Image (cartoon, rainbow, N blue to C red):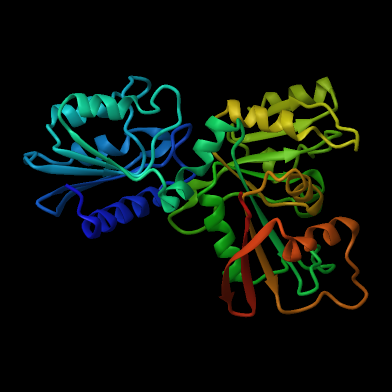
Length: 367
């Protein structure tokens, strides 16, 4: 029943659909679904905001008179169990879908092959493309959370030509407006964004998505603040909407209560032997929160902490063609971070010209 050319076309479309809601589907992965009949698309669907509805429901419920001889192209195995959402397998069976093409098996123990077995038991032909690397990009954070108990971690770096990541005195940004717009797109497709306390003190960032039409896709904000120095008057605190988490090692009850009264989560974390907060504890908490995609945006020290432990999936390195000046030397953390460009651990995956800036995308070399 396979039609390689049509199957590839329709599955690629489903994968593109899934890409639209990355970072916005809560604990669920962003899944795409394309329904066809006689090799013509009759409906499409994608996992909704905060995970509801599932892509299959989104696609099928849009069809008033569901035809026979249909094929469903789904980027991840449909769920067979009932949770916050109803069973997608049950819906596919009820609609008498003839064939289901799945890009990847769901590693979640509640699913993991059970959906496929139920479909087959009810006479539905199933084809599995479980090595689909393009689909894996969309599901990577979800799968990593299930298998390795921590989210997909990507890093954003902005630097001068010589690799310095600290703006010149009196300047707010290193890169141009095109680079910053691309950076906001990254914010929109990640569940959470993380910075260090030094970034908060120096820049007083908002860490939201400020692109027209994507304002409601701002990520959860996370501050790594060992000594709980986050100012109460900072933008992140003043404008928090139950979307700020502070990890700290200092138990200052008065300040913690002040933050908690504003809906801010303050989480105690132990220090490691370098005096920094223990990354494993932080990632364990993010796993429990079902954060699938984390963007680390501020501070070369924090970025290096993740890189050194081989926890980073992608690095988005924005750089200007200008130098900061001969008097500006790289600090120890910047020197470490700049070694990525020549590291055997990372491969240059893509290069994008952004006027007088460039974006290099590095990916972790996997076995």
